[in-house]
Structures are given as C-alpha cells and as structure tokens.
Length: 542
Ligand SMILES: *[C@@H]1O[C@H](CO)[C@@H](O)[C@H](O)[C@H]1NC(C)=O
Ligand SMILES: *[C@@H]1O[C@H](CO)[C@@H](O)[C@H](O)[C@H]1NC(C)=O
Ligand SMILES: *[C@@H]1O[C@H](CO)[C@@H](O)[C@H](O)[C@H]1NC(C)=O
Image 1 (cartoon, protein in one colour):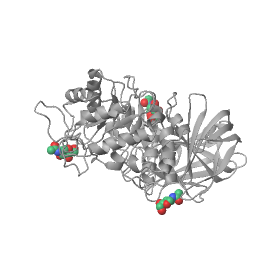
Image 2 (cartoon, protein in one colour):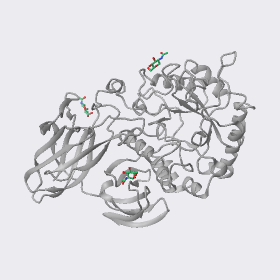
Image 3 (cartoon, protein in one colour):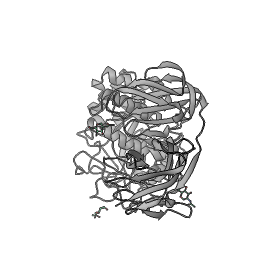
Image 4 (cartoon, protein in one colour):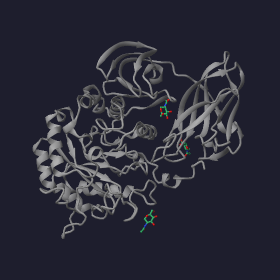
C-alpha cells in the first residue's frame, strides 16, 4: 500500500494555520524540569522536593530553567466526594498544593499535569486508571489554579474511550479536548501556560486559530530510553511544520534526554542544540542529584540557550539533506544573524564540510556556539572534524547572499510511468505521480544536461504523508533511489511534506553526477522494496 489514502480524512479538518495562543505566556519557549524521562510516572513527593532543590542549587533557574513540573502518576484513581481531582496520598503525603508552595518558595514556577481522557497515562500499560480530566475541565482548571499552578501539561491517554490507552490514529477529533481545557484555564483568570501533549497524532501545529496551546508535542515520545533513531524520527516529523512556531506557541519536540542513557554525550549535544534552535521547550528530564559535569556543560551552554530564547522566535527550518551524511538546517535570529545546525549522520568522527550556500550565503562571519569560539570569516564552506552524530552549531553574521539557482522543471505527469506508478489528482492545480517504488518507476526523459553535463543540482517537489508513531527503516521519511542515465541508483531520504497527502514539499535538493550535455538525459526514480513519495515535479538547475 502506498499509504496515501490513510489519514486524508482527518487532514481535511485542519486547513487553517495555527495562531499562537494569546494568553501572554510562552513568549519564548518554556524552560525547566520534568521528571518523566528519569522517573516515568513514579515520582514521589520526596523526589520532587529533592529535584527542585537541586535545580536551584545547580544554578539552573538563572539560565532560564524556571518551570518545575510534575508529570503522570500523582493522581488518585477516584475523585473527591465533591467531584474534584485529587492526589494519591501515598505518593503525596503532604499534598500537591504543598508541593506548589515548596516550589514557589524556591522561586520557581509550578507546573501540573493532567490528561484529556477518561483516565490519565501511567506506567503499567494503562491499568492504573488515574483520574483524567475529560468532562471535568472547568472543575479541574479551577482546582489547578487554586493550587497555584503556572503550567499545565495535558496528555492524551484514553482520549477515545475507557479501553483505548494510547491511540496514534484516533477515530475522533482530539482538538476540542484541548480547546475545552484551554478555555477552562483562561476562565480561571490565573496565567497558566498550556502545554498540549497530544503526541502529534492529529498535526496540532495546524490546529485553527481558536486554539489551543502555548506548545504542542509534534511526535511520539523521545524515550525513555532515548535513541538516535528516535531523534531521526522526530526531526523528520518537524520538517513540514517549522513555520508554525512563534511567540506564544511552539513545536514541542519532547522532554530533553540530556543526562540519560541511550544517547552518547555527543548525541546529547546535538539533541540539545537542535531542540534549542527549533525553539522547542527545553525541559530537563534527568535525575539532578546525580548529574555529571558533562551533562551540565550541555545544559548550561548560554550561547545555545540564547538561540532558544531569541526574541524573534523563529525555528530553524530544513535546508538540505545529504542522505546518510549530513542535514543542514538554519533560521534567523532577532539581531539579523542566522543560526545554522549541521548534523553529522555518519556513525564515525570525520571531516565534515558545510557549504554556506546551503543556508543561502557565499560568505559570513561565524561563531561556533558549541565552543563559543569565533571562526572569523568563512568563504564558500567550512571544514571541521565532527564526532559521530555530532553537530556544527554556527551563528552567522554579515552573510553575503549566494546566487540562487534557477531550475528547469519537468512535471512528473509528463514522465514515463512504469510498473504500478499512477497519477493522482490532489486538487485542481496539482496532480502527482504515486505508487512509485515496489516495482513502480517514474522516468523523466529528454532532461537537459546543459552545455557541459556532469554533476547537476536537482530539485524535487513531492508529497509524503507517511507519518509514523514508531521507528521504521525510514521513520517519517521515504527513500527514493535516483538513477541518472541508467547509472547507479543513489538513495535519497525524503522527509514528510505534511501528515496528510495533499501538501507539497517544494525544493528538496540533491546533486547527482552522470549527466550528458544537451536534452539527452533520463532520470529514473524507484525503490525496490518500498514506496517513494508521490512526485509533482523535478527541477534541474541551469
Ligand atoms: C474504544 O475505542 C477503540 C478505538 O477506536 C475501539 O476499537 C473500541 O471498540 C472502543 N471501545 C469501547 C468500549 O467503546
Ligand atoms: C549507522 O549504524 C546503524 C546501526 O548499525 C546503521 O543502521 C546505519 O545505517 C549507520 N548509518 C550510517 C550513516 O552509516
Ligand atoms: C493544491 O495543492 C497544492 C499543494 O498542497 C497547494 O499548494 C495549492 O494551493 C492547492 N490548490 C488549490 C486550488 O487548492
């Protein structure tokens, strides 16, 4: 199956852009601490107190980490006789309001947690049946406000019914659950930052203007345990929605795994820098009583924190992928400079060359934000040793624009379709070719190699809505194998264009050798064992 029929029905409901929630909160991404990646849903009152004290004694609040949030597992399983949400007294002998006072007395903001379902999430396969807030939004918002809550993380377990624990393709619209709770929070009159934890299953970045939250999880959990594959899955899922992040509403890539098992120190550095530059909330989620100097070194990088908290509030966006080699992302900062994040996908330390043209410059003055070192003026490119899964994080100022290539376009529908490849009408103006791969092929003929042939820059416009909740061979991406004039097929990983099958990704770039001069070339797209995206057109740079 190509998958393009799945999910199209849900996608049609979400056509408008997200607008930031206008409650004056989340002007920059939230920073703070949450227990989940370290303690799951089993955090005790004593642990919360110790962690809050550690956050302060480690000097983290002065760097911006000032939300101290509880997570799942705090609730009782039945409401009070008055119908109010309440805590489990064996977990919270002094009560949640007392923890709120404790946290406030440390100078921190206090975050609470609930769930827009019949029951909340838990750690025992959904059998704990902690209280959920669905149908009790007004009462629970009032309770949280009375406890002094400054933040609410709102989860999505049992959102469908009392037996459906975690549903990555729910048969109902989830957005009203979040809108109802947000309205209830607003009605309390207390400023409570609203963090939607819907796991990205109905593309909350595209929820309409009435919505909805100061941040929204874009994807399934990063862990625990963390893994490099989980990062790849989340990063691919971010590709089509970076433009929706802004002051008041942010793409939430999930809690940090800095300090935890599953990622190397270098991978944690890449994770932290990418999350920061994507303007994700930065919620530390490790045991602060055993934190190492290496972990603190990552979390306390003030240059990278400044990128996260930059007042312009623009996320980095996807610029270029060199499959299995490097990703290049960049975005603007308030002072007119640019931040570029280059990820080394290779499993080894190696010499990595970053082309400034990939972020639109021919030259720029650079600072390495991982080290704080000034690199001076870079012209054309910058080559440096980058550790396995490490990254370059560069602040670029005084950038001189690189020439913008112009492309000759070849519509996919005018290509030669082999095997099962079939045109698909998206709308009045866009028809794509689907079922490429698994025997289906799309061949562009009479492609112009210019006067010299050789290596050409290609640009693909495609649709890939093959969203995944769990890791696959190409999580939230699809592989296309591209062959020029019958030569070796080159693997190209194409990330999501959206979570539905009606939105294009425009301008995926790949350079390939093997072109002849003149309009004599063929370019064939295929995949022997999976489907590729659906193609709209291919451009060839003049
Ligand atoms: C709960 O929802 C799931 C998923 O839609 C469905 O399969 C199941 O039948 C529902 N159960 C009840 C009791 O309604
Ligand atoms: C890195 O190693 C993993 C696990 O062996 C492998 O699946 C992956 O293809 C490797 N990546 C690259 C870019 O070589
Ligand atoms: C058709 O779909 C394309 C790709 O998503 C979109 O850019 C364009 O605005 C759509 N056109 C119409 C008329 O809906």
